[in-house]
Image 1 (cartoon, one colour):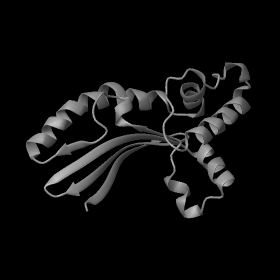
Image 2 (cartoon, one colour):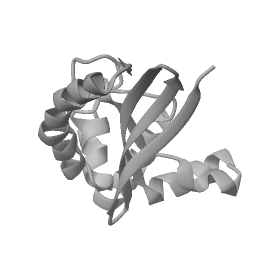
Image 3 (tube, rainbow, N blue to C red):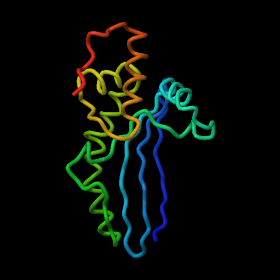
Image 4 (cartoon, one colour):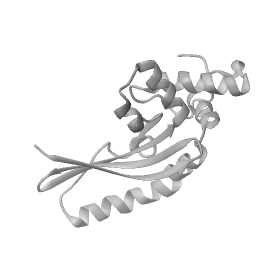
Amino acid sequence: MGIKSEKSALRKIPDGRQTIGIALYDYNPIFQFSFVTCVRIDKVEAIRHHILETASKYHGISETLMMPFQFFSNGPPTYEVQTEAQIQSVMSGVAPLFRQRVLPFLDRYRDIATLDQGMNRDGSIPPFGNGWAMSTTILFGLSCGQSGLLRDRRPLS
């Protein structure tokens, strides 16, 4: 049985927050870790919690979009290391991906309109996770309420 620890880097955006999280599992002497990139749009989450009647203690921890690191790389879903040299090797391999792919992704998807565009209209963000359908539906509704552009909706596959 391992010990799990979670940490994240957080960036505030006008409509919510973005995070890059890391989950670390200590199976002494082996460690496993994985990364996830999240975007939270507060209006979307307020609607989600109203519909689902979620207990208020959980309202602050939901995410509108959660993307595993594999979306940005061809690497494994989980990295396994045992030595400091292995940690340095993995980090030197993933650091460029954060600069070249993750941060530009977060710079692009910062609000209702851009998330709706990527998740519903142009398909640049593929489906992932249990909350995907509700997030896309709420984003679509909020975006249409703001712009009225129903004709741009990507057809369901």
